Length: 255
Image (cartoon, rainbow, N blue to C red; front, side, top):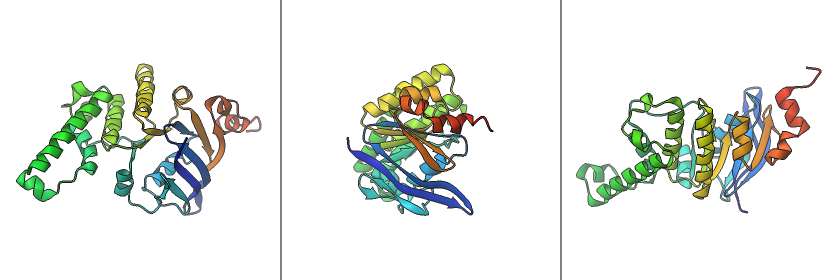
């Protein structure tokens, strides 16, 4: 297997707080990997360092053999990294289809002049973007709600809409931050299949999730962090029985 993403001694401080402490792990191309840990462990900060929302104080983020730690967010997206957010960030007053079209924008070449004069190339791109957006809505099961305002969708469907928008950027690597948040058991089971379907499209998946049943069922590899530092890494079965992981989640008798 080829390593697609590699974190090397990744460190981030906020004042005197070390939020991410020399974290190292690799994500192989075509894998589904879970990043887990107790609340406040630094998981979302790791995601923000990968996607350019934060800059690391030390260490490096290597994507497809290229350092991306100093690149702006839009450049990282153009390289093929997409993400969803723990706190849903949709355009709530726009329709579902318009939200997904926003994800298509990074792959469009026509400028403002072409849009103003409606050139054949611009019209062709616009048609292609619409087809892509419809395809991604169908992929997550929201094709019947394409014209619904995002704010009128259920919380679980808003999560799926974020995934569709991320997929519309045509990523090679997708980062899902708490994708099952607000979903019931039936929706979560469908989400597990969606995550597998994403991987079957050749897209590598890295996710944070508190739903341990989802993590254990969907992920092939897990990385566990506590207080910003990696404490364990391995397959779900090994992680379940790791004493350090059990202590991180459940505490010790002394506590």
